[in-house]
Length: 191
Image (cartoon, rainbow, N blue to C red):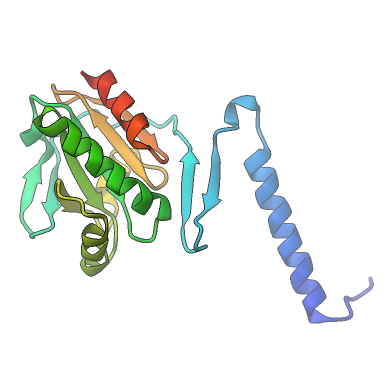
C-alpha cells in the first residue's frame, strides 16, 4: 500500500470524501426528496433550511407553557380565539435573522387578527435580546434554550414556524424561510 507523501494530501482526501458523502446524502433518494436540502449559512456558522419538511407527527395540543423573556410564563392556550403563528429563531441562524423583520411587517399589517409569538432557541438570553433589538420585533417573545418546545412541536431545522388555528389546533409546522408573501398566504389558510 502506497503512503501519501504529505499530510496535506491526507487532509485533502478526507475533505473530498466528506464532500462526496454530504453530496450523495443530499442528492440521494427519489424525486420527492428534492426539497430536503440543508445549506450552510452565509457566515458558515450555522446551517439554515431553504425548504425542508418532516413527515413526523405534529404536536396538535397547544396547552403548553413557555417562558417569557421577562422570566414569567404563559400558555399558548391564552391565544385561543385567534390564529397563532409561533416562530422559532436563533441569532446564529442567518435565515432566521433575515425573516424576522418580515414577520414583524406581517404582524403589523394584520394587527389583532393574528397573534405572533417568537421563541428564541439561543442558549444565552443576551444573544436573543441583541437579535430582538437588531430586528425590531415587538410581538410576544419566549425563550427555549434547551429546545424542548422546538422538539415538542416537531421542529427539524431553523427557522421553524408553527401555524395554529383559532381553536388551538396545530395546522402546520413549517421548517424553512418564509417571506412576507409566503407567510401571509399560509396565515390566510388558517382563517
